[in-house]
Image (cartoon, rainbow, N blue to C red; front, side, top):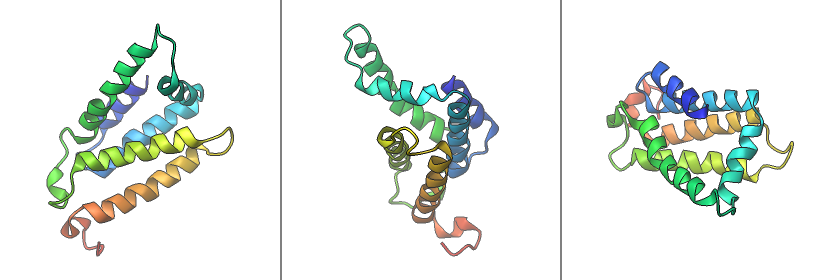
Length: 141
C-alpha cells in the first residue's frame, strides 16, 4: 500500500527533487494517518528474529535503499545540486532522519503532524545548503 501511495505521488509530481520528497513524504504520512498500525509494523521489521520470516524481511529491507533512490531521483534534474553535493547522500540523510524519528518515538510522544513539521524544516535546510544559489529564484540562498 505504501509503495502504491509513493509511486502515485511521484507520478503526480514534477521533477524538482525537494517537491518530490515532500509529495512522497506526505503520501506516506497520509497513509499512516489512515492506518496507524503501519508505523509499528514497519518498525517491527527491523527487529524481527523469527527464523521463518527474518531472512525475507532483511532482504526486503535491503531492497529499500535502491527503491527509495529510484523514487527520489528518477527524472529529477540533479544539475540543481551544487557540484560537491551527492543527491543520493541527501536521500540517505532524509531516510535516516525519518526512520530515526519514527524509531525513537514512544506512544503519544511524536505525532505524524510533528514529524511533517520537522521534515519541512529538514527539507528547507537541506535545500538551502545543497542547491545552487541561482536556482532559488532570488531568495538569496
